[in-house]
Image (cartoon, rainbow over all chains, first blue to last red; front, side, top):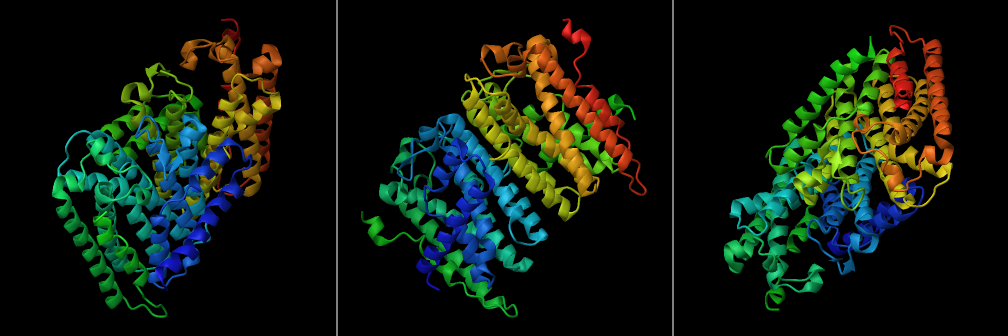
Length: 305
Length: 305
Protein backbone atom coordinates (compact mmCIF):
# COMPACT_ATOMS: atom_id res chain seq x y z
CA UNK A 1 0.00 0.00 0.00
CA UNK A 2 1.20 3.47 -0.79
CA UNK A 3 2.03 5.54 2.25
CA UNK A 4 0.11 8.62 1.08
CA UNK A 5 -3.09 6.56 0.73
CA UNK A 6 -2.48 4.81 4.04
CA UNK A 7 -1.90 8.12 5.80
CA UNK A 8 -5.00 9.72 4.40
CA UNK A 9 -7.35 6.82 5.10
CA UNK A 10 -6.07 5.75 8.47
CA UNK A 11 -5.50 9.18 9.97
CA UNK A 12 -9.09 10.05 9.22
CA UNK A 13 -10.16 7.09 11.34
CA UNK A 14 -7.83 7.97 14.21
CA UNK A 15 -8.99 11.59 14.17
CA UNK A 16 -12.59 10.43 14.24
CA UNK A 17 -11.78 8.15 17.15
CA UNK A 18 -10.10 11.02 19.03
CA UNK A 19 -13.33 13.04 18.92
CA UNK A 20 -15.63 10.04 19.47
CA UNK A 21 -13.96 9.19 22.79
CA UNK A 22 -14.26 12.79 23.86
CA UNK A 23 -17.95 12.90 22.92
CA UNK A 24 -18.60 9.59 24.65
CA UNK A 25 -16.89 10.43 27.92
CA UNK A 26 -17.45 14.14 28.50
CA UNK A 27 -21.05 14.97 29.43
CA UNK A 28 -21.32 18.72 29.89
CA UNK A 29 -19.80 19.72 26.52
CA UNK A 30 -18.81 23.00 28.16
CA UNK A 31 -15.58 24.96 28.23
CA UNK A 32 -13.35 21.99 29.03
CA UNK A 33 -14.76 19.95 26.17
CA UNK A 34 -14.36 22.85 23.76
CA UNK A 35 -10.76 23.44 24.79
CA UNK A 36 -9.83 19.76 24.51
CA UNK A 37 -11.46 19.51 21.11
CA UNK A 38 -9.86 22.73 19.87
CA UNK A 39 -6.35 21.42 20.45
CA UNK A 40 -7.10 17.89 19.25
CA UNK A 41 -8.51 19.28 16.02
CA UNK A 42 -5.63 21.68 15.44
CA UNK A 43 -3.94 19.24 13.07
CA UNK A 44 -0.25 18.51 12.93
CA UNK A 45 1.71 15.78 11.24
CA UNK A 46 0.29 13.03 13.47
CA UNK A 47 3.61 11.19 13.25
CA UNK A 48 3.02 9.20 16.47
CA UNK A 49 -0.36 7.69 15.60
CA UNK A 50 0.92 7.00 12.08
CA UNK A 51 3.86 5.09 13.52
CA UNK A 52 1.56 2.94 15.68
CA UNK A 53 -0.53 1.98 12.69
CA UNK A 54 2.34 1.62 10.21
CA UNK A 55 4.13 -0.76 12.58
CA UNK A 56 1.00 -2.89 13.04
CA UNK A 57 0.45 -3.04 9.29
CA UNK A 58 4.12 -3.78 8.54
CA UNK A 59 4.06 -6.70 10.97
CA UNK A 60 0.92 -8.15 9.43
CA UNK A 61 -1.40 -7.19 12.33
CA UNK A 62 -4.88 -5.67 12.26
CA UNK A 63 -4.59 -1.91 11.90
CA UNK A 64 -8.03 -1.40 13.49
CA UNK A 65 -6.66 -2.64 16.80
CA UNK A 66 -4.42 0.40 16.92
CA UNK A 67 -6.94 3.20 16.46
CA UNK A 68 -7.63 3.71 20.16
CA UNK A 69 -4.00 3.57 21.21
CA UNK A 70 -3.05 5.90 18.37
CA UNK A 71 -5.77 8.31 19.51
CA UNK A 72 -4.62 8.07 23.14
CA UNK A 73 -1.04 8.77 22.11
CA UNK A 74 -2.13 11.87 20.21
CA UNK A 75 -4.02 12.97 23.35
CA UNK A 76 -0.75 12.78 25.28
CA UNK A 77 1.19 14.61 22.57
CA UNK A 78 -1.52 17.30 22.42
CA UNK A 79 -1.53 17.76 26.21
CA UNK A 80 2.26 18.19 26.14
CA UNK A 81 1.99 20.89 23.47
CA UNK A 82 -0.69 22.79 25.40
CA UNK A 83 1.43 22.80 28.55
CA UNK A 84 4.68 23.57 26.67
CA UNK A 85 3.05 26.61 25.08
CA UNK A 86 2.02 28.14 28.43
CA UNK A 87 3.47 31.52 29.46
CA UNK A 88 5.43 29.84 32.27
CA UNK A 89 7.10 27.54 29.69
CA UNK A 90 7.76 28.48 26.06
CA UNK A 91 5.15 31.26 26.05
CA UNK A 92 4.03 30.56 22.48
CA UNK A 93 0.99 32.33 21.14
CA UNK A 94 0.79 30.42 17.89
CA UNK A 95 0.88 26.70 17.17
CA UNK A 96 0.32 25.32 13.69
CA UNK A 97 -0.72 28.81 12.65
CA UNK A 98 -3.54 29.00 15.20
CA UNK A 99 -3.71 30.76 18.58
CA UNK A 100 -2.56 28.43 21.36
CA UNK A 101 -4.98 27.10 23.96
CA UNK A 102 -4.19 29.64 26.68
CA UNK A 103 -4.62 32.51 24.21
CA UNK A 104 -8.11 31.28 23.31
CA UNK A 105 -9.30 29.89 26.66
CA UNK A 106 -7.03 31.47 29.27
CA UNK A 107 -4.29 29.82 31.27
CA UNK A 108 -6.43 28.01 33.82
CA UNK A 109 -8.52 26.23 31.21
CA UNK A 110 -5.43 25.44 29.12
CA UNK A 111 -3.71 23.79 32.08
CA UNK A 112 -6.84 21.79 32.88
CA UNK A 113 -7.48 20.81 29.26
CA UNK A 114 -3.96 19.39 29.18
CA UNK A 115 -4.54 17.55 32.44
CA UNK A 116 -7.78 16.10 31.14
CA UNK A 117 -6.25 14.93 27.85
CA UNK A 118 -3.44 13.16 29.68
CA UNK A 119 -5.90 11.47 32.03
CA UNK A 120 -8.24 10.51 29.22
CA UNK A 121 -5.43 8.82 27.31
CA UNK A 122 -5.24 6.13 29.98
CA UNK A 123 -9.00 5.65 29.91
CA UNK A 124 -8.98 5.22 26.14
CA UNK A 125 -6.26 2.56 26.22
CA UNK A 126 -7.82 0.56 29.05
CA UNK A 127 -11.28 0.71 27.47
CA UNK A 128 -10.00 -0.25 24.02
CA UNK A 129 -10.99 -3.63 22.58
CA UNK A 130 -7.65 -5.32 23.10
CA UNK A 131 -6.52 -8.00 25.54
CA UNK A 132 -6.03 -7.35 29.26
CA UNK A 133 -2.31 -8.06 28.80
CA UNK A 134 -2.07 -5.50 26.01
CA UNK A 135 -3.97 -2.88 28.03
CA UNK A 136 -1.63 -3.25 30.97
CA UNK A 137 1.55 -3.40 28.86
CA UNK A 138 0.55 -0.25 26.99
CA UNK A 139 -0.50 1.64 30.12
CA UNK A 140 2.78 0.88 31.88
CA UNK A 141 4.77 1.83 28.78
CA UNK A 142 2.85 5.03 28.08
CA UNK A 143 3.18 6.20 31.70
CA UNK A 144 6.92 5.49 31.63
CA UNK A 145 7.42 7.24 28.29
CA UNK A 146 5.36 10.29 29.17
CA UNK A 147 6.30 10.69 32.82
CA UNK A 148 8.96 11.64 35.31
CA UNK A 149 11.67 9.62 33.61
CA UNK A 150 10.51 10.36 30.08
CA UNK A 151 8.84 13.26 28.34
CA UNK A 152 8.20 15.42 31.42
CA UNK A 153 11.80 15.01 32.59
CA UNK A 154 12.91 15.92 29.05
CA UNK A 155 10.90 19.12 29.22
CA UNK A 156 12.50 20.02 32.57
CA UNK A 157 15.98 19.35 31.16
CA UNK A 158 15.13 21.36 28.07
CA UNK A 159 14.11 24.34 30.22
CA UNK A 160 17.20 24.00 32.38
CA UNK A 161 19.41 23.71 29.28
CA UNK A 162 18.09 26.90 27.73
CA UNK A 163 20.61 29.68 27.24
CA UNK A 164 23.46 27.39 28.19
CA UNK A 165 25.49 25.38 25.73
CA UNK A 166 24.93 21.66 25.95
CA UNK A 167 27.32 18.97 24.76
CA UNK A 168 26.14 16.79 21.89
CA UNK A 169 25.59 13.95 24.34
CA UNK A 170 23.50 16.12 26.68
CA UNK A 171 21.46 17.44 23.76
CA UNK A 172 20.77 13.90 22.57
CA UNK A 173 19.64 12.91 26.02
CA UNK A 174 17.22 15.82 26.32
CA UNK A 175 15.69 15.00 22.94
CA UNK A 176 15.61 11.30 23.64
CA UNK A 177 13.36 12.02 26.61
CA UNK A 178 11.40 14.99 25.34
CA UNK A 179 10.58 13.66 21.86
CA UNK A 180 12.12 10.22 21.58
CA UNK A 181 10.22 8.50 24.36
CA UNK A 182 6.77 8.97 22.82
CA UNK A 183 8.09 7.87 19.42
CA UNK A 184 9.52 4.75 21.02
CA UNK A 185 6.16 4.18 22.70
CA UNK A 186 4.39 4.49 19.32
CA UNK A 187 6.59 1.82 17.79
CA UNK A 188 6.37 -0.40 20.89
CA UNK A 189 2.58 -0.11 20.92
CA UNK A 190 2.43 -1.15 17.28
CA UNK A 191 4.58 -4.21 17.96
CA UNK A 192 2.49 -5.21 21.00
CA UNK A 193 -0.76 -4.82 19.10
CA UNK A 194 0.65 -6.92 16.24
CA UNK A 195 1.74 -9.62 18.74
CA UNK A 196 5.36 -9.36 17.62
CA UNK A 197 7.92 -11.49 19.50
CA UNK A 198 10.37 -9.94 21.96
CA UNK A 199 13.29 -10.00 19.51
CA UNK A 200 11.38 -7.98 16.93
CA UNK A 201 10.25 -5.56 19.64
CA UNK A 202 13.88 -4.97 20.53
CA UNK A 203 14.89 -4.39 16.93
CA UNK A 204 12.02 -1.99 16.50
CA UNK A 205 13.01 -0.16 19.66
CA UNK A 206 16.39 0.53 18.08
CA UNK A 207 14.62 1.59 14.89
CA UNK A 208 12.52 4.01 16.97
CA UNK A 209 15.63 5.49 18.57
CA UNK A 210 17.12 6.25 15.17
CA UNK A 211 13.82 7.54 13.84
CA UNK A 212 13.25 9.79 16.84
CA UNK A 213 16.74 11.22 16.72
CA UNK A 214 16.48 11.80 12.97
CA UNK A 215 13.15 13.52 13.52
CA UNK A 216 14.74 15.97 15.94
CA UNK A 217 17.87 16.64 13.89
CA UNK A 218 15.65 17.33 10.89
CA UNK A 219 13.53 19.73 12.92
CA UNK A 220 16.64 21.65 13.95
CA UNK A 221 17.93 21.75 10.37
CA UNK A 222 14.60 23.01 9.04
CA UNK A 223 14.65 25.72 11.69
CA UNK A 224 17.76 27.03 9.97
CA UNK A 225 17.02 26.38 6.30
CA UNK A 226 13.34 25.55 6.13
CA UNK A 227 10.27 27.58 5.56
CA UNK A 228 7.83 28.61 8.24
CA UNK A 229 4.95 27.04 6.35
CA UNK A 230 6.20 23.49 6.65
CA UNK A 231 7.12 23.87 10.29
CA UNK A 232 3.92 25.71 11.18
CA UNK A 233 5.93 28.07 13.34
CA UNK A 234 8.32 30.94 12.90
CA UNK A 235 11.79 29.86 11.77
CA UNK A 236 14.99 30.94 13.38
CA UNK A 237 13.39 30.64 16.81
CA UNK A 238 16.05 28.30 18.17
CA UNK A 239 18.75 30.80 17.26
CA UNK A 240 16.78 33.64 18.85
CA UNK A 241 16.45 31.63 22.06
CA UNK A 242 20.13 30.66 21.77
CA UNK A 243 19.15 27.05 22.24
CA UNK A 244 21.62 24.28 21.62
CA UNK A 245 20.79 22.58 18.31
CA UNK A 246 22.42 20.00 16.04
CA UNK A 247 23.40 22.52 13.33
CA UNK A 248 24.84 24.67 16.10
CA UNK A 249 26.96 21.86 17.53
CA UNK A 250 27.78 20.00 14.30
CA UNK A 251 27.54 22.73 11.61
CA UNK A 252 24.72 22.50 9.08
CA UNK A 253 26.61 19.99 6.91
CA UNK A 254 27.47 17.89 9.94
CA UNK A 255 23.85 17.85 11.06
CA UNK A 256 22.74 16.73 7.62
CA UNK A 257 25.28 13.92 7.70
CA UNK A 258 24.10 12.89 11.18
CA UNK A 259 20.52 12.86 9.93
CA UNK A 260 21.44 10.61 6.99
CA UNK A 261 23.32 8.26 9.29
CA UNK A 262 20.31 7.77 11.56
CA UNK A 263 17.96 7.27 8.63
CA UNK A 264 20.28 4.71 7.05
CA UNK A 265 20.47 2.77 10.29
CA UNK A 266 16.70 2.90 10.68
CA UNK A 267 16.32 1.49 7.18
CA UNK A 268 18.88 -1.24 7.79
CA UNK A 269 17.00 -2.41 10.89
CA UNK A 270 13.63 -2.73 9.21
CA UNK A 271 15.20 -4.42 6.20
CA UNK A 272 16.72 -6.92 8.60
CA UNK A 273 13.34 -7.58 10.24
CA UNK A 274 11.81 -8.04 6.79
CA UNK A 275 14.40 -10.67 5.94
CA UNK A 276 14.52 -12.53 9.25
CA UNK A 277 11.03 -12.39 10.75
CA UNK A 278 8.87 -15.07 9.16
CA UNK A 279 5.74 -15.66 11.24
CA UNK A 280 3.13 -18.11 10.00
CA UNK A 281 0.03 -16.68 8.36
CA UNK A 282 1.31 -13.14 8.36
CA UNK A 283 2.78 -11.01 5.63
CA UNK A 284 5.71 -8.90 6.72
CA UNK A 285 6.06 -5.85 4.52
CA UNK A 286 8.06 -2.85 5.70
CA UNK A 287 7.23 -0.51 2.83
CA UNK A 288 5.15 1.87 4.92
CA UNK A 289 7.93 2.27 7.46
CA UNK A 290 10.49 2.69 4.69
CA UNK A 291 8.33 5.48 3.27
CA UNK A 292 8.11 7.14 6.67
CA UNK A 293 11.90 7.04 6.92
CA UNK A 294 12.27 8.46 3.40
CA UNK A 295 10.02 11.39 4.31
CA UNK A 296 12.55 12.53 6.89
CA UNK A 297 15.32 13.02 4.33
CA UNK A 298 16.08 16.64 3.55
CA UNK A 299 15.30 17.26 -0.09
CA UNK A 300 17.52 19.36 -2.32
CA UNK A 301 14.81 21.92 -2.98
CA UNK A 302 14.51 22.46 0.78
CA UNK A 303 18.24 23.10 1.05
CA UNK A 304 18.22 25.60 -1.80
CA UNK A 305 15.40 27.71 -0.46
CA UNK B 1 -8.62 -2.46 65.53
CA UNK B 2 -8.66 1.09 66.72
CA UNK B 3 -8.71 3.66 63.95
CA UNK B 4 -5.93 5.80 65.41
CA UNK B 5 -3.57 2.80 65.44
CA UNK B 6 -4.64 1.73 61.96
CA UNK B 7 -4.12 5.22 60.62
CA UNK B 8 -0.68 5.59 62.12
CA UNK B 9 0.64 2.20 61.04
CA UNK B 10 -0.88 1.98 57.61
CA UNK B 11 -0.31 5.57 56.52
CA UNK B 12 3.36 5.14 57.28
CA UNK B 13 3.46 2.27 54.81
CA UNK B 14 1.60 4.17 52.13
CA UNK B 15 3.84 7.19 52.54
CA UNK B 16 6.90 4.96 52.27
CA UNK B 17 5.43 3.42 49.13
CA UNK B 18 4.80 6.88 47.64
CA UNK B 19 8.51 7.72 47.91
CA UNK B 20 9.74 4.23 46.98
CA UNK B 21 7.95 4.34 43.64
CA UNK B 22 9.41 7.76 42.98
CA UNK B 23 12.91 6.57 43.85
CA UNK B 24 12.52 3.46 41.74
CA UNK B 25 11.22 5.17 38.62
CA UNK B 26 12.96 8.55 38.47
CA UNK B 27 16.63 8.29 37.55
CA UNK B 28 18.12 11.78 37.53
CA UNK B 29 16.94 12.83 41.03
CA UNK B 30 17.08 16.41 39.81
CA UNK B 31 14.63 19.30 40.01
CA UNK B 32 11.60 17.30 38.91
CA UNK B 33 12.23 14.59 41.49
CA UNK B 34 12.72 17.18 44.23
CA UNK B 35 9.53 19.00 43.33
CA UNK B 36 7.46 15.81 43.22
CA UNK B 37 8.87 14.65 46.54
CA UNK B 38 8.35 18.05 48.17
CA UNK B 39 4.62 18.02 47.50
CA UNK B 40 4.17 14.31 48.27
CA UNK B 41 5.89 14.79 51.62
CA UNK B 42 3.90 17.91 52.52
CA UNK B 43 1.51 15.88 54.62
CA UNK B 44 -2.23 16.35 54.75
CA UNK B 45 -5.00 14.21 56.15
CA UNK B 46 -4.48 11.42 53.59
CA UNK B 47 -8.23 10.75 53.65
CA UNK B 48 -8.24 9.07 50.25
CA UNK B 49 -5.53 6.45 50.86
CA UNK B 50 -7.03 5.80 54.30
CA UNK B 51 -10.39 5.12 52.70
CA UNK B 52 -8.87 2.63 50.26
CA UNK B 53 -7.25 0.70 53.09
CA UNK B 54 -10.13 0.98 55.57
CA UNK B 55 -12.55 -0.40 52.98
CA UNK B 56 -10.26 -3.35 52.21
CA UNK B 57 -9.86 -4.10 55.92
CA UNK B 58 -13.58 -3.70 56.63
CA UNK B 59 -14.42 -6.20 53.90
CA UNK B 60 -11.92 -8.75 55.20
CA UNK B 61 -9.37 -8.25 52.39
CA UNK B 62 -5.59 -7.94 52.56
CA UNK B 63 -4.66 -4.35 53.34
CA UNK B 64 -1.21 -4.78 51.74
CA UNK B 65 -2.86 -5.14 48.34
CA UNK B 66 -4.01 -1.55 48.63
CA UNK B 67 -0.73 0.25 49.35
CA UNK B 68 0.16 0.92 45.72
CA UNK B 69 -3.31 2.07 44.73
CA UNK B 70 -3.51 4.24 47.85
CA UNK B 71 -0.14 5.76 46.93
CA UNK B 72 -1.25 6.31 43.32
CA UNK B 73 -4.42 8.00 44.50
CA UNK B 74 -2.44 10.35 46.72
CA UNK B 75 -0.25 11.14 43.68
CA UNK B 76 -3.36 12.23 41.81
CA UNK B 77 -4.66 14.26 44.76
CA UNK B 78 -1.24 15.90 45.16
CA UNK B 79 -1.02 16.78 41.46
CA UNK B 80 -4.47 18.37 41.66
CA UNK B 81 -3.40 20.53 44.61
CA UNK B 82 -0.21 21.68 42.84
CA UNK B 83 -2.17 22.73 39.76
CA UNK B 84 -5.05 24.27 41.79
CA UNK B 85 -2.55 26.44 43.68
CA UNK B 86 -1.02 27.93 40.50
CA UNK B 87 -1.28 31.68 39.90
CA UNK B 88 -3.63 31.06 36.96
CA UNK B 89 -5.99 29.13 39.27
CA UNK B 90 -6.41 29.81 43.01
CA UNK B 91 -3.05 31.59 43.29
CA UNK B 92 -2.27 30.17 46.74
CA UNK B 93 1.17 30.70 48.22
CA UNK B 94 0.68 28.45 51.23
CA UNK B 95 -0.61 24.90 51.49
CA UNK B 96 -0.59 23.05 54.80
CA UNK B 97 1.51 25.85 56.23
CA UNK B 98 4.27 25.43 53.62
CA UNK B 99 5.04 27.44 50.49
CA UNK B 100 3.28 25.93 47.49
CA UNK B 101 5.20 24.21 44.71
CA UNK B 102 5.32 27.16 42.30
CA UNK B 103 6.59 29.43 45.08
CA UNK B 104 9.48 27.05 45.76
CA UNK B 105 10.24 25.75 42.26
CA UNK B 106 8.64 28.25 39.90
CA UNK B 107 5.55 27.82 37.77
CA UNK B 108 7.04 25.73 34.98
CA UNK B 109 8.41 23.08 37.33
CA UNK B 110 5.18 23.08 39.37
CA UNK B 111 3.09 22.43 36.28
CA UNK B 112 5.45 19.64 35.19
CA UNK B 113 5.67 18.08 38.66
CA UNK B 114 1.87 17.88 38.66
CA UNK B 115 1.88 16.34 35.19
CA UNK B 116 4.47 13.78 36.25
CA UNK B 117 2.57 12.78 39.41
CA UNK B 118 -0.61 12.24 37.44
CA UNK B 119 1.22 10.14 34.86
CA UNK B 120 3.09 8.16 37.50
CA UNK B 121 -0.16 7.24 39.25
CA UNK B 122 -1.15 5.09 36.30
CA UNK B 123 2.25 3.44 36.23
CA UNK B 124 2.02 2.59 39.93
CA UNK B 125 -1.40 0.96 39.60
CA UNK B 126 -0.52 -1.07 36.53
CA UNK B 127 2.79 -2.24 38.04
CA UNK B 128 1.20 -3.13 41.38
CA UNK B 129 1.04 -6.79 42.40
CA UNK B 130 -2.66 -7.25 41.76
CA UNK B 131 -4.54 -9.14 39.05
CA UNK B 132 -4.73 -7.93 35.46
CA UNK B 133 -8.48 -7.46 35.88
CA UNK B 134 -7.94 -5.30 38.94
CA UNK B 135 -5.27 -3.21 37.22
CA UNK B 136 -7.57 -2.47 34.30
CA UNK B 137 -10.66 -1.85 36.44
CA UNK B 138 -8.74 0.59 38.64
CA UNK B 139 -7.08 2.39 35.73
CA UNK B 140 -10.39 2.94 33.96
CA UNK B 141 -12.03 4.10 37.19
CA UNK B 142 -9.20 6.41 38.20
CA UNK B 143 -9.07 8.04 34.77
CA UNK B 144 -12.84 8.57 34.80
CA UNK B 145 -12.81 9.97 38.34
CA UNK B 146 -9.88 12.29 37.79
CA UNK B 147 -10.56 13.39 34.23
CA UNK B 148 -12.74 15.41 31.91
CA UNK B 149 -15.99 14.20 33.41
CA UNK B 150 -14.71 14.10 36.99
CA UNK B 151 -12.23 16.10 39.02
CA UNK B 152 -10.89 18.28 36.19
CA UNK B 153 -14.41 19.17 35.05
CA UNK B 154 -15.22 19.98 38.71
CA UNK B 155 -12.30 22.37 38.86
CA UNK B 156 -13.48 24.10 35.67
CA UNK B 157 -17.01 24.43 37.05
CA UNK B 158 -15.61 25.70 40.34
CA UNK B 159 -13.65 28.42 38.52
CA UNK B 160 -16.66 29.33 36.38
CA UNK B 161 -18.90 29.41 39.48
CA UNK B 162 -16.67 31.82 41.38
CA UNK B 163 -18.18 35.18 42.21
CA UNK B 164 -21.57 34.04 41.07
CA UNK B 165 -24.18 32.51 43.33
CA UNK B 166 -24.82 28.86 42.67
CA UNK B 167 -27.98 26.97 43.58
CA UNK B 168 -27.61 24.22 46.17
CA UNK B 169 -27.95 21.66 43.39
CA UNK B 170 -25.23 23.29 41.29
CA UNK B 171 -22.93 23.54 44.30
CA UNK B 172 -23.42 19.85 45.07
CA UNK B 173 -22.63 18.95 41.49
CA UNK B 174 -19.39 20.95 41.48
CA UNK B 175 -18.27 19.30 44.71
CA UNK B 176 -19.36 15.88 43.59
CA UNK B 177 -16.96 16.19 40.68
CA UNK B 178 -14.16 18.19 42.24
CA UNK B 179 -13.87 16.28 45.52
CA UNK B 180 -16.45 13.50 45.45
CA UNK B 181 -15.14 11.61 42.45
CA UNK B 182 -11.74 10.77 43.96
CA UNK B 183 -13.42 9.77 47.24
CA UNK B 184 -15.74 7.47 45.32
CA UNK B 185 -12.71 6.06 43.54
CA UNK B 186 -10.99 5.40 46.88
CA UNK B 187 -13.96 3.40 48.13
CA UNK B 188 -14.40 1.61 44.81
CA UNK B 189 -10.73 0.68 44.73
CA UNK B 190 -10.97 -0.79 48.24
CA UNK B 191 -13.97 -2.88 47.26
CA UNK B 192 -12.28 -4.14 44.06
CA UNK B 193 -9.10 -5.04 45.94
CA UNK B 194 -11.16 -6.90 48.57
CA UNK B 195 -13.02 -8.78 45.80
CA UNK B 196 -16.38 -7.52 47.02
CA UNK B 197 -19.44 -8.48 44.96
CA UNK B 198 -21.24 -5.98 42.73
CA UNK B 199 -24.07 -5.36 45.21
CA UNK B 200 -21.64 -4.38 47.98
CA UNK B 201 -19.76 -2.16 45.55
CA UNK B 202 -23.00 -0.34 44.78
CA UNK B 203 -23.84 0.12 48.45
CA UNK B 204 -20.35 1.42 49.10
CA UNK B 205 -20.65 3.82 46.18
CA UNK B 206 -23.67 5.38 47.88
CA UNK B 207 -21.69 5.44 51.15
CA UNK B 208 -18.89 7.28 49.33
CA UNK B 209 -21.34 9.84 47.96
CA UNK B 210 -22.57 10.63 51.48
CA UNK B 211 -19.05 10.65 52.88
CA UNK B 212 -17.73 12.93 50.13
CA UNK B 213 -20.59 15.39 50.48
CA UNK B 214 -20.21 15.40 54.29
CA UNK B 215 -16.50 16.03 53.87
CA UNK B 216 -17.18 19.10 51.76
CA UNK B 217 -19.97 20.51 53.94
CA UNK B 218 -17.70 20.11 56.97
CA UNK B 219 -14.88 21.92 55.17
CA UNK B 220 -17.21 24.83 54.42
CA UNK B 221 -18.44 24.94 58.04
CA UNK B 222 -14.90 24.90 59.42
CA UNK B 223 -14.03 27.76 57.09
CA UNK B 224 -16.61 29.79 59.02
CA UNK B 225 -16.16 28.53 62.58
CA UNK B 226 -12.95 26.52 62.57
CA UNK B 227 -9.39 27.37 63.29
CA UNK B 228 -6.75 27.88 60.67
CA UNK B 229 -4.54 25.24 62.27
CA UNK B 230 -6.85 22.35 61.63
CA UNK B 231 -7.57 23.42 58.08
CA UNK B 232 -3.94 24.23 57.32
CA UNK B 233 -5.03 27.34 55.50
CA UNK B 234 -6.38 30.75 56.30
CA UNK B 235 -10.01 30.72 57.38
CA UNK B 236 -12.70 32.96 55.98
CA UNK B 237 -11.21 32.55 52.50
CA UNK B 238 -14.43 31.35 50.94
CA UNK B 239 -16.21 34.47 52.18
CA UNK B 240 -13.41 36.68 50.88
CA UNK B 241 -13.65 35.07 47.47
CA UNK B 242 -17.46 35.31 47.72
CA UNK B 243 -17.72 31.66 46.84
CA UNK B 244 -20.95 29.76 47.19
CA UNK B 245 -20.76 27.53 50.27
CA UNK B 246 -23.17 25.38 52.27
CA UNK B 247 -23.34 27.77 55.27
CA UNK B 248 -23.98 30.55 52.79
CA UNK B 249 -26.84 28.74 51.10
CA UNK B 250 -28.28 26.90 54.11
CA UNK B 251 -27.22 29.08 57.09
CA UNK B 252 -24.67 27.67 59.52
CA UNK B 253 -27.29 25.67 61.41
CA UNK B 254 -28.73 24.33 58.20
CA UNK B 255 -25.30 23.26 57.01
CA UNK B 256 -24.67 21.43 60.28
CA UNK B 257 -27.99 19.62 59.93
CA UNK B 258 -27.13 18.68 56.33
CA UNK B 259 -23.76 17.36 57.49
CA UNK B 260 -25.40 15.19 60.17
CA UNK B 261 -27.89 13.86 57.66
CA UNK B 262 -25.15 12.70 55.27
CA UNK B 263 -23.15 11.12 58.09
CA UNK B 264 -26.20 9.29 59.41
CA UNK B 265 -26.94 7.90 55.97
CA UNK B 266 -23.31 6.86 55.53
CA UNK B 267 -23.48 5.00 58.84
CA UNK B 268 -26.76 3.33 57.98
CA UNK B 269 -25.30 1.98 54.72
CA UNK B 270 -22.24 0.41 56.28
CA UNK B 271 -24.32 -1.03 59.13
CA UNK B 272 -26.51 -2.62 56.50
CA UNK B 273 -23.51 -4.13 54.73
CA UNK B 274 -22.26 -5.45 58.06
CA UNK B 275 -25.58 -7.18 58.66
CA UNK B 276 -26.21 -8.52 55.17
CA UNK B 277 -22.83 -9.35 53.63
CA UNK B 278 -21.65 -12.73 54.88
CA UNK B 279 -18.86 -14.06 52.67
CA UNK B 280 -17.22 -17.34 53.59
CA UNK B 281 -13.84 -17.18 55.31
CA UNK B 282 -13.93 -13.42 55.72
CA UNK B 283 -14.67 -11.26 58.70
CA UNK B 284 -16.75 -8.21 57.89
CA UNK B 285 -16.15 -5.49 60.45
CA UNK B 286 -17.06 -1.89 59.66
CA UNK B 287 -15.60 -0.28 62.75
CA UNK B 288 -12.81 1.52 60.90
CA UNK B 289 -15.27 3.07 58.49
CA UNK B 290 -17.61 3.98 61.35
CA UNK B 291 -14.69 5.75 63.02
CA UNK B 292 -13.90 7.62 59.81
CA UNK B 293 -17.50 8.77 59.64
CA UNK B 294 -17.47 9.82 63.31
CA UNK B 295 -14.39 11.97 62.69
CA UNK B 296 -16.36 14.14 60.30
CA UNK B 297 -18.87 15.20 62.96
CA UNK B 298 -18.45 18.77 64.18
CA UNK B 299 -17.60 18.65 67.85
CA UNK B 300 -19.05 21.09 70.35
CA UNK B 301 -15.66 22.52 71.22
CA UNK B 302 -15.14 23.35 67.55
CA UNK B 303 -18.44 25.19 67.44
CA UNK B 304 -17.66 27.17 70.57
CA UNK B 305 -14.29 28.40 69.45
